[in-house]
Amino acid sequence: MPENARILVVDDDATMHAACRRVLEAKGYEIVSALNGRECLTYLENAIVDLVLLDYKMPDLDGIEVLCRIRQGDDPDLGVVIITGKGDMRSAIEALRLGALDYVTKPMGADGLLAVVQRGLEVTSIKRHLRRFNREGKREFRPDFLIGENAQMQQVCETLVRVGASSLSCVLLRGETGTGKSLVARALHDNSLRAASSFVQVNCTAIAADLAEVELFGHEKGAFTDAHGSRKGYVEQADAGTLFLDEIGYMPLSLQPKLLNVIEDKRFRRVGGFEDVTVDTRVVAATNRDLGEAIGAGEFREDLFYRLNVITLTLPPLRERQQDVLLLARHFLSHFSKQFHRDVWDLSPEAQKLVLDYHWPGNVRE
Image (tube, rainbow, N blue to C red; front, side, top):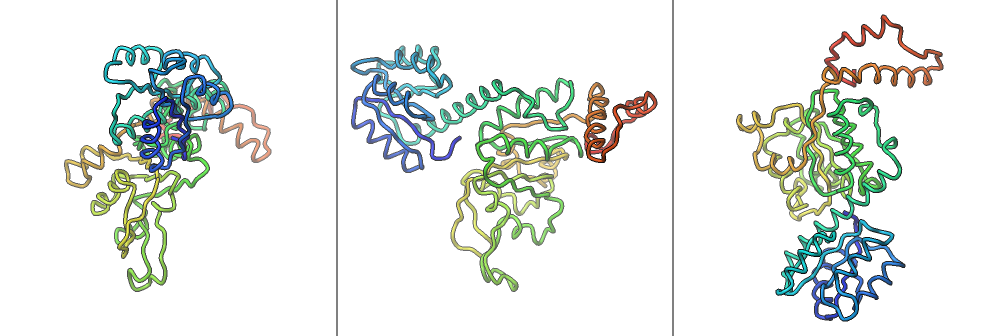
């Protein structure tokens, strides 16, 4: 979802404009207004918006006609939410059939409006990203580990595009060591609206248990003997960007509630702190551990698992991608031949047999 998203409110009722502005501007959205359908279409010809809240009943063009013209315009993926009165449900259903993302009824509560807007912005972002992806082609989104014809990896690539376009949902990556989980995490970040901000990678098995909380959440001055100043942790360093937690299954149980708060409430406290720190961080986690077994053993929180497991991508081991082994081998051969200035163009038949017969326990990394 774009930061500082611009929302166009189209309604001939000034009270409706005031209500939307009060609720949505408090959440950081930019609100622009149009009093009728023609004014809406004129505005869209000269400016880009991220979502339209469109009243169904208006004096010149009704909401259905405006919706149809938006779908035929320069930005057909622009999200449109229809605003209806209590007696307009049939019209709302018609609008959904014509491509409206959702509808809300008057009067609307603040929580309901925010939920509809957030969902609409996310869908618009995904659709725009997919259109750009289809227009520019898939070659630009093809890291080394996605080379090949394996159907499961092709599905991973397609899902990466859809998920990357949305910057909200947590993503859980599953797969053996060396299957490319860290590359997928980086690709998710680079192909999202967070790409201009930090990508922070943390290996949960590489942090000493007694330092894990300080490393992740930072500390305030005087929190402990050597804390001569305050320090940002990895979570805060990833603000507006992506926090990649590799081997999440081995995160200390004591830290898991604090991570859950970051995901749910976007806030935490540094070690030794008394005030909450607010962050907008997308969490991508990876594991080669069976988290179901870890939950059963009391080593992983079930509620954290459900928050992380919004979208799951499973990367197959290389031994299950037999048709891709030679393609990968030739790709790396070409890459390193250029890097080391060697004229090696292909694998000998003997080398090909060795490559195909090997079971690759280290997967693509090996």
